[in-house]
Image (cartoon, rainbow, N blue to C red; front, side, top):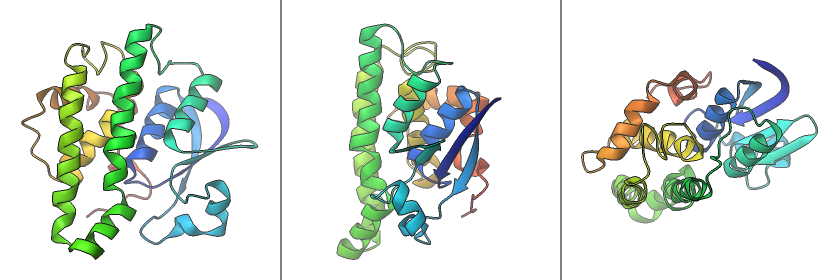
Length: 216
């Protein structure tokens, strides 16, 4: 793997961090894994707050450059390290990738993160957490099924792995493993998940493979 100065501040369960881990694996970039325990509040430490004042993972350090937010990190990696492109040349296909990635990053994942779930539990009770999560995941997954039905091949937008796949894989994994969702209404996403399970770059980025993984 290529020698780099990359450091990734990550949390094992973070699907946002997982997207970046997949990209680093696909581009065969060596990086130092810097665990940030969100449950213990390590994201609020002075050290991490300097990297990301919003106190969210992931954050990437590349020499003197610091990039926070998974979407920004992925675009940075794509421009600086062009091997294994994450975006197709075809403009329409590229637009579908952007749309799929945005559905996950803007309309599903933020509504299931730790801060939101704690707020829901405080205001509505612990029993409402899972109901809230499943509602928003199902809404987003239904939209993704419609968006991708005329574009998917082996992967989300054809027979090559692109940006959309990096967002889909961690979200589907979380739905199945963390939230124990019934995915029978989303056959396309289930098929894509089977394809991702065959890719080492994806599987090595999954939560269970991370050094800070904590079995539940």
